Length: 333
Image (cartoon, rainbow, N blue to C red; front, side):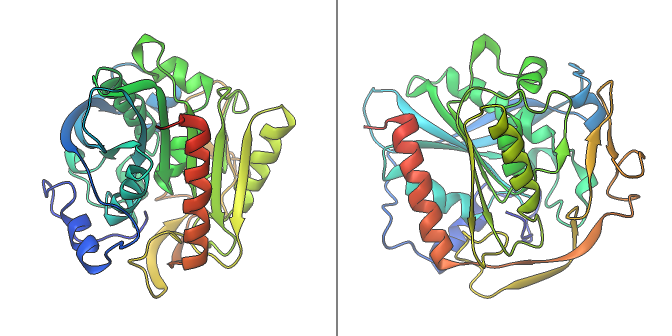
């Protein structure tokens, strides 16, 4: 999610989600959770160059994740890892966790910000490399791989906006080889809601042989769907299992009922007009037109001013589509 709400560092992981749940109850979704656990995740905070060059000793970080187990028992459950966007974890992830609980699917909601003393990157995306979220996803999978109630072979990663890009880019085999989970763990699928797709990486078409599903609003002016259209076309040409679903008239964060009316974010940074390319050898993203290293602070292609808004029809359709995908991919019982 890319809407920033006031949240002090160290604030309880889902303090805001409790408020949203009270204001916007989901009467049609069971909220039953048999067990809730908070886990620490030992990870790193790499710069973009450190991540892309495969550096192994970036700055260490301790972040957290909330594991929701939908039923009692001893059986191993399928799970969805949820990666938040620029506004940090919120009621949006809570809503999705409740939806998945109705399928018998556990969720692990990762908070990549609080442990790093970040509240929001909405107006300053340089605060944290977005590639740190990919590392967080890999480390979260390692945590789940050791849990007695989780089936490590049935874990899907799903993200929103900044987290959506991390979710689908975590499928790149090169990234997994450099930073991936220990013990040969891999994701069973990848889901991105309104993600960025405008980075052309070295070996960027060599992705895992697992399904990738992207969902976008056709009216999104924050992260336009056009970049994902082109990316999906390139991957489909090389035989990869990837699809993009677009919802007419839907804006960024179209799945968040808290946004009853459209919200203008005048200072939010967007790279909607930026063409990106990873230089060879790897380790640096440049503007492919100027050939200059990219930063949000200095590149003239960065703009400010976006809209976020809820779309009830798109929300209903994306919930249905993702649940159907999880039933096929994870085979919950």
